[in-house]
Length: 619
Image (tube, rainbow, N blue to C red):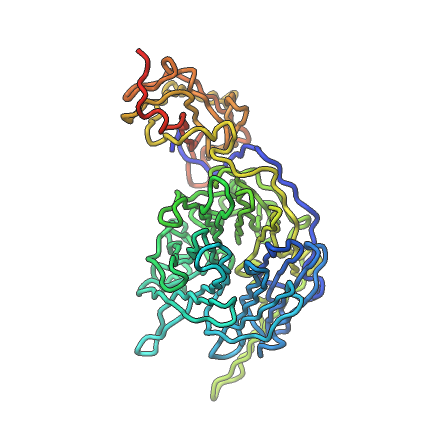
């Protein structure tokens, strides 16, 4: 990783593929007058015409329920096929609807809404979600997810449900949190085992993410761990971007759900729940294609470390044992006015298609002057998450608050002996956040389908659209670079003669590479830009050898090597780099000075390392 002259906040993307967005389609039209919140969706990989979406709906002032919508024609039209309150008394919440590897559909909800004990209720469908079995009662598991093993390994056909739970202390006055993994070996008819992991005080599990299955049958899922449970109540901590109140972690099972391996930390989590309920739920995806990134895990979550909600991303190339340094992938700028404290981006989703292309979507507030409304935006990566394309708007209309939208009202009535009735009327808490979850599915043709909420009709409704990305995942992002290996750990970058011309807003720097390893490196030697940012402007790299100006730009140092070689402890010739800054901001921004002109991450790529082990440079 190479850094130049400070730190920044805006990533400029190199456009190396085309993103095409289809027509927006209303999923929830059968309930067009009822507000919808919290969402999941999936597509049958055995038949891409079959699609499912499920959501919570506001039934009345005291009840929410959950509804399933199914499409049999590739998302063109949708029908309501199940309402959870018809067979789960009191309604239900936290809906999950997915297709298994063999086309069996599963629908899981929590209920009843009122009172304890609570349970999970699972239904199955063998006709694409048109009709459903009676619900089976399962042990309660909060914020549950379901996944089916479609690999060719010995656990093929296993169905897993992950979630969290609570165990009371001996004194009965408190509880600790637990991770749950339930396993079925008969396509969800019965669940033969449940394994748990307990969070030891003062840690507290908060923010359960979904599960995925790798090609060898390993199950992995994400979750958050509050470092102290009082963060749940102490709002001052939530609002301090300098305090990582939690960790984001991943845990795996490699034996068909019989046990859980030790959890691995991905990153600190600067969780800020009051701004968005969607800020507490991460998402996970895995590449099951035959791309160069097969079995790579991808994680996204909402993070507040920079003083606003942003979409943070990390990947693991070794099945979750270690993770890349996290980075922001929403490609907008922090507001110049510190009083604005935004714009926010929240509730991310992530998926991988048949060509190894990674897609990410989120609710984006860059076009919302009140930092409350949002558009759905989408971006994609063709190189295993190293660089990302410029994001595009998916929703044709915003979710906006103009004073004309329906405001669902929740009514709470309580009474204690000898006290007057306590009546509280409040707007449903998910009105300004869309709930905890959004969803994105991928069909067998490699087309992404984000699902989101917006209130263009005056009522919060479920929408979807097709998003096609022209391209496949490629090592180092380009066919011209696939034969090169990463040698960044063998190279250091020396910079001299830096100069910033304020009249042209151009910055020049002279660079040379030094081989710090014991290997002899030979041409081609190329530096590929992964990220270029600035605290004060919009930066572009001029004169890159492949013509790109941002992420994906390539600087070829081959011509400045001595006879095409870079010997151990030797230095290349000099190469001049030129940057330009546009849309400049002042160095003083609010109470702080911002001096970061350019912040650049890159990898050094060389000819195959294995092929040059025994070679010597010519005299």
